[in-house]
Image 1 (cartoon, one colour):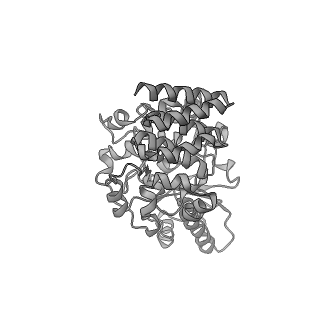
Image 2: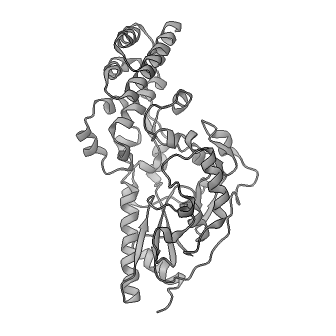
Image 3: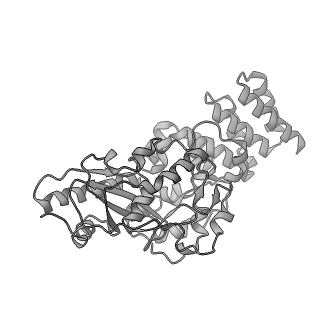
Length: 381
């Protein structure tokens, strides 16, 4: 066999639970150079590869690559959709992006793509060299998927599957054999028309123009970044402790999209709207035992605690003051800062006494400044 047909690859993919697949060849993506250059100038997040040459060249990931099989795996289930639209009334509950509701997609999608690689080996009757890419390769996943004919990129910079909308995970299987492909040109905003709801709805103004994102302002990045969260973003986080789906929920293209039927992505009740106070009391071991199998866990407990402190401040949950105060003495700078900010939002005599006591002992200038700002806010209440 010299080349696998599109029909054959789709049939093999369906056998391993990949219902939406497309194929492109492994030639470079030179059209991405201007976009990647401008993106770097606006400020990279650090989650992506810095070398533009690697990002446009598939063979930088697999030297022998000839074809790329791309999969779009839907994650928003019927239950997930209902859950996301029904927020608990209690002020001690935060919320997370729908993509972390269930099992870590890295494991689910990687396993299915590996199974597909093995089936390709069986089909060719020889060892097929392949490599899986799920958030790990330097390639621009959205453009690879677009060229493979799986969908298009919207004004919100999200990739849209023709079938499932933007609630999909993207993964690729680079192989050293030829598979029938049909390369598609870029189609940014091809179905958006005059609609700009996503740009208007973005809480931080991260979508600075159609298809242009200042990624370090996106709350999906902000909730995962290291260290102290800049003040300008804290109130805008609301009760988010992980991610942001605003630009997806306001998009008309998602209103009629199909939902996922993958059990692994069904929402965990304790995760969709986590108890913020409980987050503050978890040990690392407890956190990993409960959430280690989800995509939420990769940044660790302290990131979630930092975000939970800010969420409690935004929720006006004054009953949480006693739970927040101990974090003024935490070894981690970002937790002391977040606790100070939250207490400044909540106000009251108990918060004021704790803030003044912490200030008298604090040696870190960043934390001291935060404590002073919080004290001023409390005294102005």
